[in-house]
Image 1: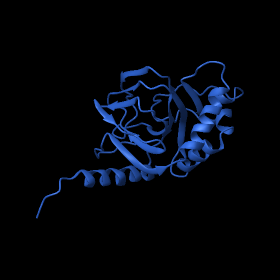
Image 2 (image 1 turned 30 degrees about the vertical axis):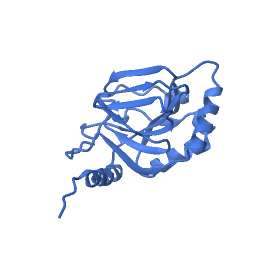
Image 3 (image 1 turned 90 degrees about the horizontal axis):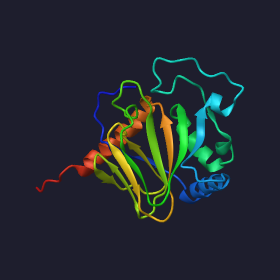
Image 4 (image 1 turned 60 degrees about the vertical axis):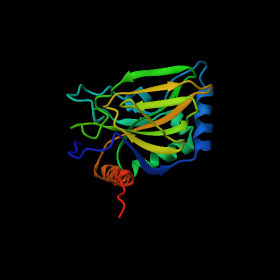
Length: 207
C-alpha cells in the first residue's frame, strides 16, 4: 500500500508488552540451539514450515509477501506470550514474517537499507520492532540519528532509509520484528502516532 503522506522516519506506537515474559521465551528458544543463532524465525513461508506443502510459483513481485502463504513455526507454538503478541497485530492486519533477532556483544550490523520496508513504497510490507533486551551498549542509528527505544515498546521505523546497529554491551541485543501489510487500519494507527509526535515537537510560542 502506497501512501502519499510523508511520515517521520521513527514512530513509537501505542502498544507495550511484558518484557520479562518476552525475555524468558526468547532465551528459552535460544537455549534449544547448540550454537549461537542470530535469527530465530517465529512465522515463515508455509512451505518452509511444512515440507509437504508445494513451493510457491514464481511471482512478479515479492515485496508485500503475497507470493506465499505464511505459517507459525514450532518455535512460536512453544512461546505462548510471543504468540499472543502476534495475535494482537493479526486483529488489525495480515502478519507475514516474524523473527527474533539476536545481536551478540561486541557486534555490529553494518549500515544498509531495506528497499521495500517503508510506508512510502508502492507495494511493500512494513516492519514493527519491539525491543526485548537493549543493554546500555546498544545503539540503533537511523539516518545517522540515534533512536532511543525502550524495551517493551513497539516502533515503526522507515527502514528504506539507511540504518545500522552497534552492540558494545556484554549481553545480546534482542528484538522481536513483525512484518505486516500496511492496510488502512495500521496506517491510521501510525498516522495518529505520527501526528502526536509532530504536536509534541512543535515549537511553543510565548504569548
